[in-house]
Length: 170
Image (cartoon, rainbow, N blue to C red; front, side):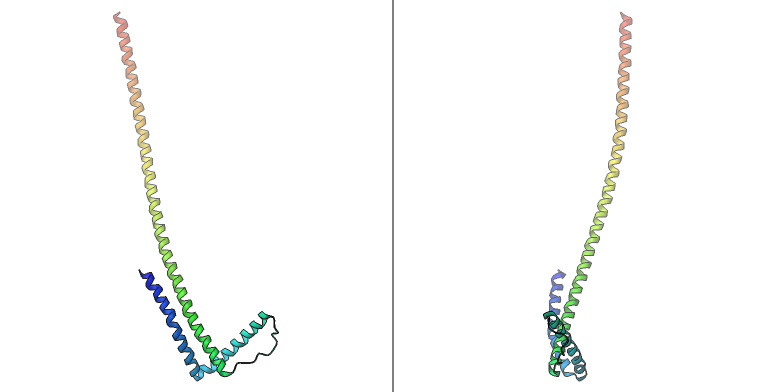
């Protein structure tokens, strides 16, 4: 029952992170200290992405890359911050889901181990019972053999007496 609520909660968290990211972008553009620091980040990001794109497309990489103007740099940095925030939230949700799933699997594995242990104990008990029944069967067979042998010997002795009695009376 908690699984649908967990899924719904993570979906809501991801959905709510987008407006928060937009708010962060706006605040980053307004705050003067933050604005100056993110311009440098945006320029570095622009240089890196342009260099990588040039290498991918086989163009010259030793050409000077023109920096972004201040407004464009603030906009790019704001977008980067917003995307980074959404990505961080999504990554945290994924990590949470993986850990929750791992805990669930660990619980299932522990239950399986306990069930296997119970089956092993039951198997040992059954093996002991089988061994006890084998011993009792062997004892019973020995007693039966002794009884049959004793009866057979008694019959032979009885027949011998009958034969001696019959011979002496004739």
